[in-house]
Amino acid sequence: MSYAVGIDIGGTHIRLAIVSKTGKIEQVIKEKTDKSNGKDSLLAQIVSLYHQLDIKKYQPIGIGIGVPGPVNPKDGSVYVIPNLNITDIPLKEYVKQHLGLPVYVGNDANVAALAEASVGNGKDAEVVQYLTLSTGIGGGLILSKKMITGHYGFGQEVG
Image 1 (cartoon, helix red, strand yellow):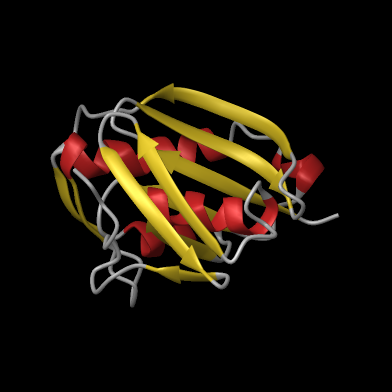
Image 2 (cartoon, rainbow, N blue to C red; image 1 turned 120 degrees about the horizontal axis):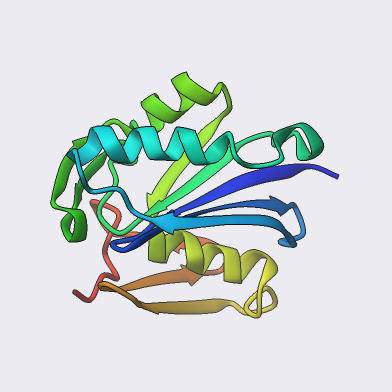
């Protein structure tokens, strides 16, 4: 069985999970998002939490990160996380460099919609619309198993 690490960066909490390719969650770590020193504290927190996971047991093959804001699809950097007041985060580059695994970064609602369309309740549906209500409001849309993101990756965002 192969596993990946999923990271959900939220306005109030950050969660890391080890997930199987069938979508089964094996382990979860959650703590308050560290906003003390902007992007530096957030990036350090991701690395620290990763090392608290049972990496030896599951040996993840990659990392997927969902962020509540627009992502540059070319380099996986984050333009802004409005709820954290952080801008210009080289997220993919930093995590790949520090953890040595392939990394995918996407808008949180978009990647949640993709997960539902792939292994969740929408796996047999042509259209999956996902709405997230948290610190902010977001949306993701999957049509025929393809993510519809808009030009900057947040075409379905509500507010």
